[in-house]
Image (cartoon, rainbow, N blue to C red; front, side, top):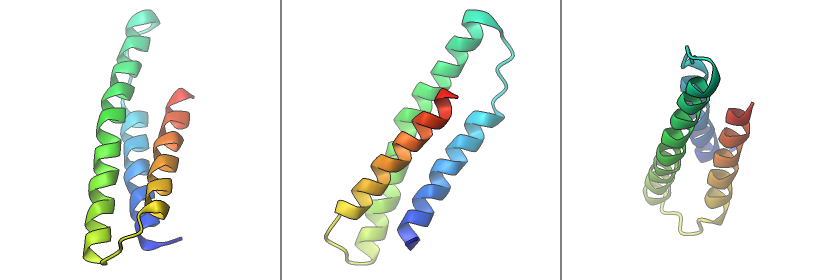
Length: 86
């Protein structure tokens, strides 16, 4: 596992932890709405944080080929979505 992959996985894991730690106190439609609101908020923020971290890493290490990092970011976003669906 590369350094950048480790960093991006750690970010995704922190979002998973935040999502898991959130207690959905309400049952029924209110609980579902609360869960999906948190999911929507996370889906907006996670890619930005992953991209920002990756861009800094690429710049700091003078790396021009972004294809591997782009694939890691896509995988991490999909991983979070699959996790949140459970």
